[in-house]
Length: 506
Image (tube, rainbow, N blue to C red):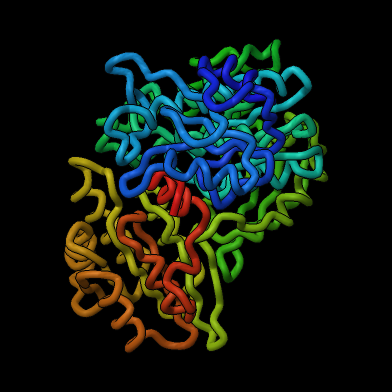
């Protein structure tokens, strides 16, 4: 694409360019990641501004720059957003004091929408996944089921907002057959906007939980927003497919909000794609019989935790609807690997200690699933749960944390270490539920938790580490596993979040 054509698409103007410069590689907001012929997207940040790195991006081989103000490089300058529109319904960029960052993001979304529409004409299938928990894992499973059927693009980690979404969409090219996208929301209208950027033909809604209930007000409010995905799907006659969790009443009810073909999945007898005879091995890996209208097959997941059964069923439904055979789906599900870091990453140390690193994020539903996985793994082991804050729960925070502490007792977890005052209700709930003494303790931070574990954990124990990202409890898992650097386990999603705040430049 020439810079002149880019300017036409986004409604921008050429700067330092005759328009003939041609973009032959992807878009990047991190100048270090640019490939020759790529488009550099200049974003303002809290500490640095991507516009200041435009000349350096050109020296690295960029074809041009997408920017909000003049730069020392061939560029397309985007128009400012109308008054009051900056960041409306969009992620706020730190340092974006004048709305220029929001204008660049809007142009990036416009470019992605144009490219996806062009590719859809030649057979691209866009699959969108949302839910309160499990989005990233399910996205990873879907991608692995579809890859043998044709070139497939999916985001690394959790690129699921107004920056990561168009960036991922623009990885697709003329050869891509499947574009698998994860859609998140911080409020009403956000999923609808992401769906406009890359209109899906297949939509998957996993569950409606308590994540972000502080921002949405209620689970019903969350359901209203998650359902924006199925509302965006085309009619069944035009290939629209809605894969809905039949085991979640709020999700199942979304069938009334779409004209797409509805495919219920779950363990309910009425599900079109369902799991029968679910059983767990000693490391909480599920096996089951996959039953569908396409036939039946046995599945043995390599992922840890019974909650992955539902994720696998949703992925199976997508693959079956897009033409995979039931035999191929069963074989591919059994070969699925974990692709995103810190999401139920189970490691056995040389001395037999099992570490369940699920520290990427947490909400009440995912916390319950993780504790159940720990209980399953710990049948013949002493179990430790190192838990921190579940963020963004609003007025429900104290009750939700209290309930998780009580659940740890009911699941016969041996030791509970609660990290941080914001999670203190977990400790109090555990003590009230089980009249615990030393079995539960409240510590100030990750360093104190590491000190306790270093002194007391033994070979053949099992340790779960889980909290929202703000708690940084992956440091605990890194310490237990002898990581050389505390940041070694960080996945690319964390890098993107950092770059998002810093204009894309370290």
